[in-house]
Length: 376
Ligand code: AMP
Image (cartoon, rainbow, N blue to C red; front, side, top):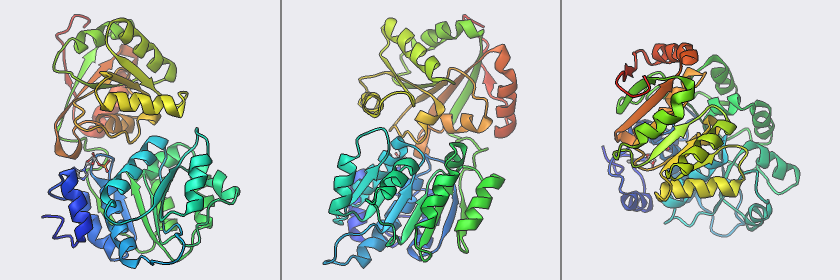
């Protein structure tokens, strides 16, 4: 199947050609026709499946076909995302796909001055991508009018709930018109997710790709048993492998992330930490350095890493095993994206064995154990 078959308009096809995408991914194939038809959609899909384009492309198409030439721009599409990184990535996608359509969009998120954001809003935007906290803040200050929203997307709803955004979401919903199209994406279909989905979707089309328990089949996974105090040595040891040009390393805590990055730097391995205590500027710099390959290792906590999309990321290293098995799936989902291959290594100390057991249960297989290493 091609993007032509999905009846996308020429300006979008041209933008996709430019991105080098030749075929739609499964979630795109399944959702684009329904979104173009004005249906509500419940999409069970994790980041890495191409879900951003699955909603961005048809929304852009619908907006461009309805575009009024004269009136002032009003917010016609609102996309809510849990983290600033994800919001920025969604915006980048809208920008890339919509570049031939003359649509104005902006991104709003906390942790930075609001001036640029409010200036953009005053000029008028068609598409607004936002994290909940700053959105409500600017709504309360009177900068945002949601009365003309026709398309509402709730992205990574599961993470939104994990992060305690439920009341913020409800406050935003209360300000949206009743008549609108709603697209709801979540990596899981847990009961609290379904409850929320059922309250906001009308006769939705359900689409499911790559449910969270089926880890990307393209990711080769292994686990190293190691004493906690030897993990830093093991990390240096595995990074000696020249094949690991680039690795995203996960720690459980922000302090842990800082410590690991510091240790790597003092051993001549260029690393940066990214987590919630870092300023927005520092986070963006670290991400940029990692993307342009001037930094070899990015050390991240789960929340900071949500939705991070790094082209051709080959390795994910779980320096600590996450307590929530689902987090493991999200972590390793940073690699092996859109069909490319990836490697995920996990360091498991004795006290983390029960977490590993939960993961094996969730993914319905036992991760292969690497027994030959100097710190076994
Ligand atoms: P997402 O799940 O939206 O975060 O997308 C994951 C990655 O796949 C991003 O790097 C996208 O740019 C890329 N991608 C999305 N759609 C396609 C496609 N049809 N072909 C190739 N790559 C894609």
